[in-house]
Length: 381
Ligand code: NAD
Picture 1 (cartoon, rainbow, N blue to C red):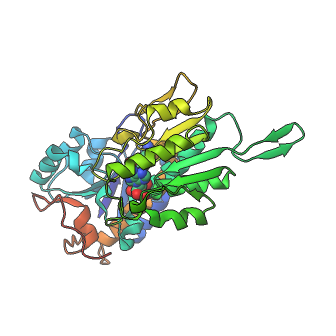
Picture 2 (tube, rainbow, N blue to C red):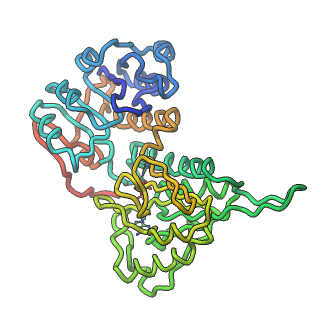
Picture 3 (cartoon, rainbow, N blue to C red):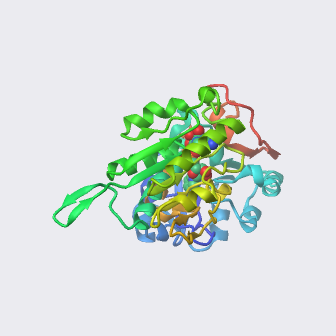
């Protein structure tokens, strides 16, 4: 198989789906590799580094799409890119199938197979291909770094000759993949870290990382938002009220709030309201990782950084992984390589598209001329 990676066309996207290292691994699996010239530049990988790794450099995107059996990329393809697909070709990428009907039909009509990386089921066997998690981990880390660069004080408390400095207080809302990464980063920088999640079973994990779980005085807490298939369920209005009451109490005390609350397929729950922002101290920072889905903070503006009248900075960037493009490309390219390794199990490197395999089936959104999204629920955990 010839595997090719084009330069991402979305403005500001710096990631790349193949690195020189992942290309070396792919070649060991028996594949040839190609990239469009400059594809890795913004992630810190030069054409020369790819060349040294045995990768063919192709001048134009059209020529790359034409020459390769498999195209691996990061962002949802543009219409021009979808038009380039042909029968028998496989595209592996984030595809946003829930909101991308037209492109899915077009790809199916062309007889191309599309594997949507966000559809890899969150089951243990698939962790090595779980690009949503590898990107969320980076986003959680970066959210804390971003908060720190907008915060005028240390995270850790210090006693110095020039005076005593109190530690920063950080609240992380939502302790999934991004939230846990944020908690780990915040505690390692020395901040007093608090965390809340509707799934009480994460309390132990939060506490083992040196943070404090915020408990609610609510009898049914254990039932509300309890885990369903690895994800939270929506909370009852009573539970939400209790949660907001607790956050209102915490708002004046917190220096940094990182919000990551999400239930897949839904708009982000609004959990940090205007009055909470108004109750925060000047100089405080909110980083809202849910900005793309509307935001967990009522005042978040997606892709913007704003400063409120009372001096609170609210960061709503939706491209944190791209802001750490070297790291995220390395992890994403590894996810892609694992996907390709599962897709080509034999020595001849040919694709065996096993629709009985839960992971392949789950991620495949078009195949054999058909739209195969949504997939049935996975059978194994
Ligand atoms: P996840 O599903 O692993 O975690 C979400 C957590 O939120 C879960 O633990 C869930 O229990 C919790 N939650 C749901 N409703 C809640 C509520 N009402 N109160 C408190 N907690 C609640 O998701 P993830 O992979 O960690 O992603 C988190 C968010 O980060 C998502 O919105 C995702 O889109 C976003 N993200 C943003 C960027 C960026 O660049 N801004 C990058 C990657 C991910």
